[in-house]
Length: 357
Image 1 (cartoon, rainbow, N blue to C red):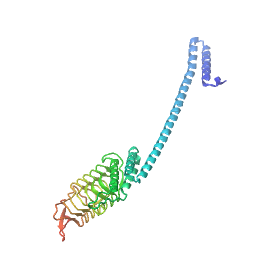
Image 2 (cartoon, one colour):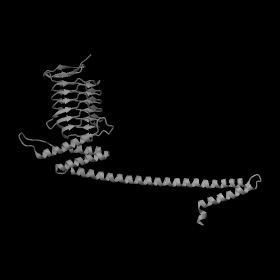
Image 3 (cartoon, helix red, strand yellow):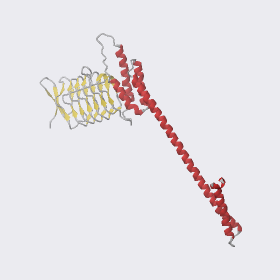
Image 4 (cartoon, rainbow, N blue to C red):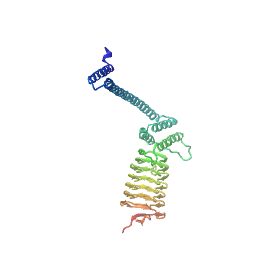
């Protein structure tokens, strides 16, 4: 009974019926030979078999497509589960490393910092979060003091080593200036930093408000896509200690140096300030160089003081420049753009003014 229900049996039955029917019908025609009648009947029956073969092939194709679709979904599900497992492991690594940053042993803290950096390298989506954690560590209170003639405090020296490691890892995680990569933000507000070197890096926004920058700071060749604030940056004594190098940097947005105190040379040679820029009330205790700098946004130099050799020969100046009570020293070499001049004050200092006409 099952055999007669199969499509194959019905196909052969229909083919036989057509063979007999068509052949018998043609044999009734005297003009048709027996061989032609059988040949035509065979073609009619064979057509049924061919149609069945086509149907069977199409059915096999659809079954194979469904099988492949099921297999693809299975692989996608396995990949999703594997990705979830990797995310879970990454979250656990991140949580454990953050926890170890509070460990008493400095070598454990250094290991935790490297673990975080390794996580950021293997999982790029963690990079901004890891940078936030590293910056948060650098914002922790830290005072490196040593009385005259006293030996260094071992605990302070160990903590300084950890902090220098954090600074280096921050630099390593930032993309190069010309890379087609995300521009990550750095929040180092109030941080105590030493030998900070971000040169040649692509950075989003940079916050260094009230930061203590010791020894030297190098931002040369950086490209800042977001806002940069060094407002009132300085040390505990109110000065930015060490050399400040910012040659050939590009500030695409705000560049805020208001109230920043530069105790050593400050070099902004060939730097581009594309957005609003202010050095309002900034203090330059030694040489300041802006030769070849380009400023296309507003430039605010109100109440800025230049105590050393000063080169303010900008390659390009914006229409909006504020120069109120901008002071330079009469006994120092002062180089100015052609559109600026100096006038002497009663206390012997000079202040920069714009030429008229």
